Length: 353
Ligand code: OGA
Ligand code: NI
Image (tube, rainbow, N blue to C red; front, side):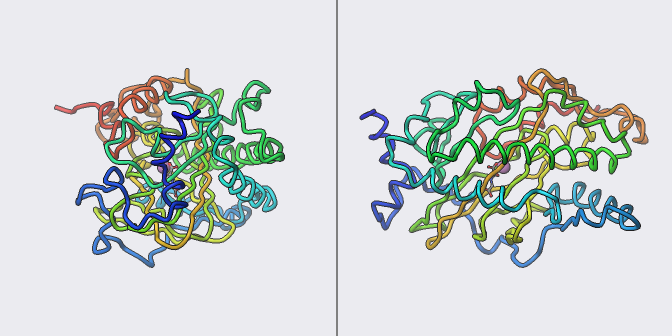
């Protein structure tokens, strides 16, 4: 444990607690990756999808908005989503409490090597990252929701497991709702994405971004695309998420009681490139801690993912943009290379003559 504590001494939360005025060099991003305020667009909202308008006359309009959001942003806010508010609040609260636990308790979940079970991580565990991120996180699998999996979750704070179980089930309900809508919006049968994802893997990643004395030099999370199917992100009221669109970073203003939904690489492949898995990053600030909870919803690791035949046929040249991939292998490749804003998806793109 001593060794882990030494490593931890370079973690973002520890540095914040120490009150450092200058961040260590390992956190300083190269100039081109720093959050340059000249290239950040503020005040523009992500597309907002109101699911309460699905019943009745509004349905076509919602589908149109969804299509636009996925094709041009790859991101949208969803409101009136039916996710129980008390489950959203409880998960945020218990996530916060986890990060307040003594270090040795949290370190019980630290693994020096990538793992498929619960993992507490941060800059101290990211040897492969060239530059450390100013965040600590807790990630664990949520689906399939077996006792074996739940037994690997933190047992502290005392209600963690109960609340995270409830939250995971609610995420699953929302994910299925969204996958059905996304299928419909692509002109596929409603069950298409659900069937393609088969066993559904769902992970939860709680991101904790402590205040940073030099937020202009570093990032909370490097630019990356999400490798999974769709991501369902709950964030608190502190801004920090930015989305790369047409060469500029757009700051996302938090919308109360909403989720941020984004398309992951598998959606880009299945939709044959129509829906975009867009690069995004997290910036930090000098005043406030920021929390977000990302639920990564994806196919079973055995699932074979390929552009939908119907969508290939619709293209004038009837060609597929992407080779088929086995999802587990895709994720393994990304983990072994590290997530650093390079588009792994480009390596499965079919080269046209
Ligand atoms: C992620 C992510 C952004 C955020 O965890 O993949 O992109 O706002 N997080 O925390
Ligand atoms: Ni992400």
